[in-house]
Image 1: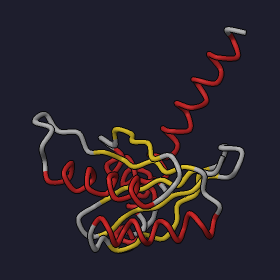
Image 2: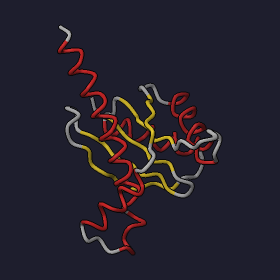
Image 3: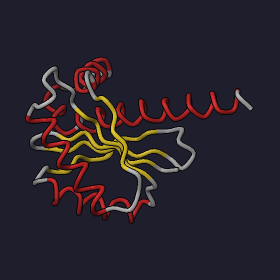
Image 4: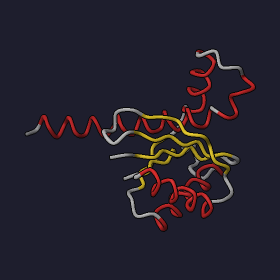
Length: 145
């Protein structure tokens, strides 16, 4: 199944998509964040165009559980579930932006280009975590047969 991952920020949303075999995740160009409903409309278009079967959204987890980022992402998840008829999963996104920045630095990408790339790389990491989790569940199920 093809999955679309979202890394929802206050200004931009990083996107990544995988192939139908759930093996390769690819970062896409980010889209502006103009509110939960507007993002759901944009994502609905991508789901239709790219034949996406599921969406995974990175959730920022804080100790209090009530940060601005968490509220923003909760609104996005609710809007997606209300508008799009595919499963919407969530993944703990802690550390993905820092890891994305580390990967860009390691690859020698100039810092001035990071704004256009870091969100997509973070979304790719979110998607890879989700796919790894699905792979583990499938392998456990196969091992029990």
